[in-house]
Length: 384
Image 1 (cartoon, rainbow, N blue to C red):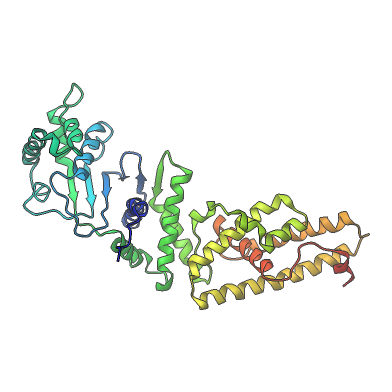
Image 2 (image 1 turned 90 degrees about the vertical axis):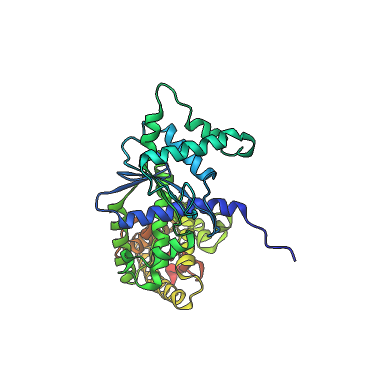
């Protein structure tokens, strides 16, 4: 029987996901006022640390002395020597293990002079056999390509600041550690995985909105965590910032709830209604999964929204009946019913975030999707 094929695309993305997990861990443990940046001067930077992150799925992966992870990272630090002057610590953080007797295994305990000597010896070995080290030869050459702006002393300065943090938890263990992190101790255990998912979404969306300066403020993340904890502990729903920008497919526009908005007719509200409904369905999918108890809670809330919606429509019909009834008046009343109902349902809940408002609007659309409710007010509704 053929072995299961590796999904190389998925594995390549695991390194990026590992980076987000590490950023979240750093933020949860950072002091007040700290700022963590992604991708600007390295994989991760803080006030004093510049991290290059290397993740390998295999827990037994060895970072040998001639591995590309080490030499390419060192080459990057050399090329950015001036930019990296403010950082007192340059850290190669890797899930790989090292052999104690190797150069990299003895690296952290060695003084700067010994580091330079052992690295020079290893470089000479590599440069003497270029055919045997094709993947790293260009990086080694770049490291020792001294010129007027970069010399032996600067290389020694870089090496003195380098730490190899090896044998770090792999992606899954790191994720499990975050779910059990003390910073989430106020969150009920059944919600912690979703809370981590929400916090990771906040980090990811920062890369979309501010790609030039992907800064994660520790205080902003902690305040978001506190607000979300209060919301879920009060019976609300955790929000997922990255889903805010999720793009819905054409099939969403064929759902009954969206068709009803078109039937008002209120075309300019169709797209936002589809986005809200899509966000809600994604959020429920993440929050509830296949848990029948949680799904029942959502259904009960939708039923309560539906009861209010039916009363709103009855009140609108009574208002319309006070004046002469014509097509324009009915359309205007239908639009007012729609706008007022969305505003009222949005005002509920303790969390005033954009995601929470979007979720509550989506819940209203979900009720319409599974009921016989119609936004459009007709003469038959007035007669009833």
